[in-house]
Image (cartoon, rainbow, N blue to C red):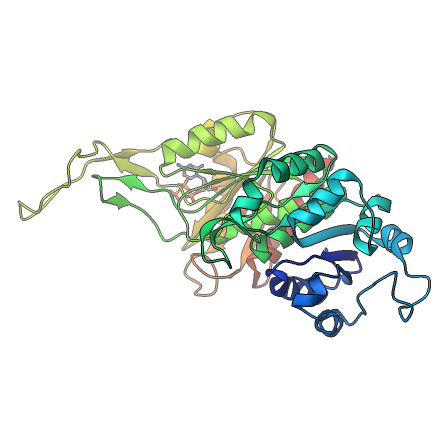
Length: 394
Ligand code: CTP
């Protein structure tokens, strides 16, 4: 989705500029035309040559007589699909909040009609200072998008909030903002992910091998196509995606409650989570000791979320099957009254739990069956969403 888009990447004088090199490289690799604008302070940390080498384009400085004629702040402001300032110092934030335009970057931002993303990076004390917070609030109120800095070790040696957000998070925000005009713009999509955990005692639970990767890929793909996404996730080791409202739950019952709440404004519910079918009838208050040679657990059914959650939205289910895949999936589609079901063969080592790839068959209510080749989970997500978009148009 970044292919052939023009991203003006503003870089200011923070020690985090070296991370902007990675950002410039990743955006260029994604097919974007990256026009770098560095402040004078930024050039003291990293030279423009680094960015010219990474983007294949010369960083733009309107006061540089050697730079290409005709490419000044107005041309940049017009050609930008998005402006991203990363890292953004307290100084650039203060200047933008005050409407000061005294270099190529501030002039471009003032002149552009494109969305502007700001990723601050500075010492915690500077970030927390009410002056900086007021400036950020002012910018937010004017429609600037702020990617909150992360907590962690700072260059000064201290620990606190102020580190430039992860590059993944900045790219996620760019995609989210740019996806606003895409085919799921204005739609609300609820996605569930991961394997639920049903407690037995304070330390043990009944779980399953779901990694959450398929659900997270769906949530990110829906976000990138412009949807407002809520992700209801069981515990996973995956990083929280940017630009998505994430609700963390543990059990099937908690997932049902979170989904029931989230679907009140949803157009689509996609249940990619591996929900436990059974839970322990009683949960021991203290850790169960190995006193007897055998132990019997009584299990009772969990709520069936897809069946029980009702409303005026499309329902998409998954069917992880080990035999009679299509027939079993069809049966589930009918039983749970779904619009689409995505069946996968969990006996295939490249498909299903924990892998980065998946081989699925998508079946719709009207019987249309589409078997896809082995694809990355992200590609599978987009193919599922293509079908969802088709159904939403009806
Ligand atoms: N699902 C659900 N609530 C449950 C169990 C499953 O909403 N308690 C959803 C899953 O997220 C999935 C679909 O139902 O989208 C099918 O899940 P699956 O476990 O394959 O089917 P089950 O109905 O549990 O049938 P079985 O385990 O007998 O194959």
